[in-house]
View (tube, rainbow, N blue to C red):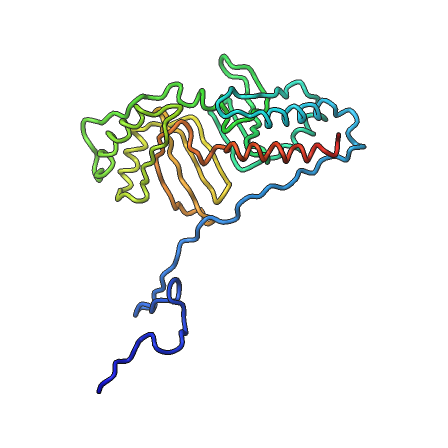
Length: 289
């Protein structure tokens, strides 16, 4: 009686799946995997002066104590809680700056507005330079995302994307996305969930992307998040519409999408993060009480 050799009979000498599990091509080619984001930022306690070195810093410590109260009393549905820093003398301002540090998210909200999340999630340092009707300002805000940026980013944005009379060459798959964008822009608002168009999964040409960028229009805000890899979020000239791009550690684009929402969740601090920030800041200030 003849026998059939079992290919799985005998010792395993290599991996079943993943790199090395498949034979190389005849030309010697090897399957290479794109490197994914790595190196997530973690919290580190700030380097603050010793208690005996805090003479004359009562104003700065007072701001930080008040900030603890704002963090503990944070209500996602309530108004933004702000602390003005413009009255602090340099030494007290330095103390606040040391305690807050720089966190994962940076925001440029146009020509006159900048915000930086601190090492305490949900604590934002916001600076406004003089321009137009707005005076200079320097304050700390507790919240998911700086409200002044949200209030201004789409002030002059269009309510819908328009179609040109004619299309240029090599534009194939972008025009059908316009009705989808307009439908969700019309329904976007405070309570609506995000609608994501994943361009990385859709066939498109460079001309398609250029067409979408031109029809959506340029925006005024740019958000950079370094929480896990690098994420660049750009507002567009269309209401509640953002261009979201994730990059790996080699600066290769790994996710390209359009997100229709008041602000993308990746840029926001969650209520749980803010509660954690309250505990951390209280621990930091415990040595001064």
